[in-house]
Length: 228
Image: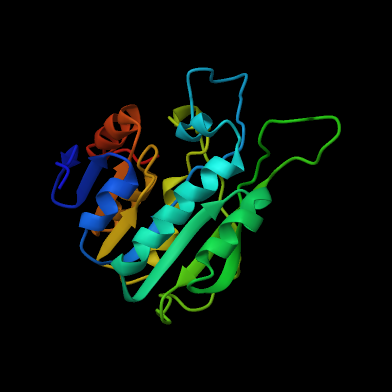
């Protein structure tokens, strides 16, 4: 088994390809993840920020095997009432959604982030939302009753972010808090938002990341008192 990069009473981080670690893990009851989208990303504001998915060169043919392998390895890890929240670019739903159809998919949630990403300002519509596929094994109850499938949650102060596709902690805390899960898994932690949300909720969490710099950032976020 690969040794943890970081570990505390709640969180364990592995610096590795998730396909190396997943076969060694015990069952989990919630997967909350924001995998590589395979989309090109550039910004004129924060040149130093990069996304691990950039190695895919915007090539869906390279992205699909990674995600397919990950889904295959997740299958035996999910207990009978496990839930999955899988973020996805809207233009990648045709690739990702079929991979998750092995489980029941009752919703594709729309996250309205309140602002638009950079891009073609003259000939396209601004991209203000991202998809989050909600899949499940069995029918886990949702804490707090039935909410709408459009979540309006601001990205907040993105100048504090370490990652171009970093999600707000509050959004992930909301999603994780909808389930009475004891162990949360994120195979693609990026800057560690899933882990931070899990820790704030007092849950156990396991995160895996192939880029060491993001493992380091995630580990530092685990020790912070200020949430972002």
